[in-house]
Length: 305
Image 1: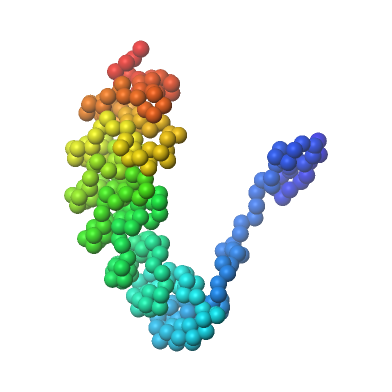
Image 2 (image 1 turned 90 degrees about the vertical axis):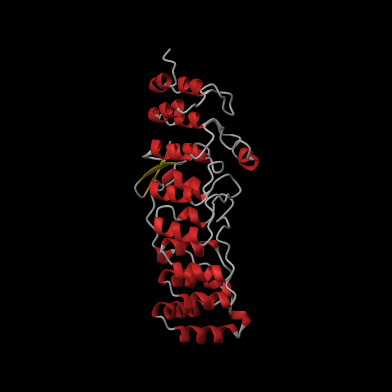
């Protein structure tokens, strides 16, 4: 057996097939300035000048550079201006945002996410005026932008005031309210429930059980609003059921058992959770608890045998 020395350690070489070799155990960090540059049609020097004009607030210089550059279609592509739009959003400077949109920069959901992050309400208003759909999912697996405002009650309220739907799903049954019950302050959850939050969508009980704190308080809110306590995960939602068919997909009680949350198990049972319902793998919550050797959970389910 031969060893090859790497920076910070050693690795196997031969004999042995390639997949048994050890890779170098650590690497030197790469600085942002060393990241590979994304190719652009617009010259990098022009983009730097435009960004400097944006930072300094010189809209006239900004327009002058754009006018001179856009006259040559071979050295200009409006889609190269993503980073400049992000800079304008962070500055909440609508004159630059409008200029870029007016010149044909396509709207990207990431612009709205950045605006929510920096509380750029002026930027969001411009996006809405330019036809941005506030309820467009960020991606197939991420709900609309309201789901990214759940830690900030002020921003969540602003988005709701401007038409955000707490129940808007992406391809899977995941909504802004799903994310809220999993990690948002209770005040934000109450706000979204008071503004049309629907407990029949988003698998709210399952997400509430995932919380790191206040599980019972949030579960109570959702149960009081009519959440189906004995429904299995993604029941009645075919795309989600098909995508996650490899998972156990049980009831909220199954989820509480899986996470070993005894207090949640007791609460769910007290509210009528049925421990005899089977998950997608054919196991009841009690069988799951026995499989995981969770004695406290087994007692909470009413069977101490």
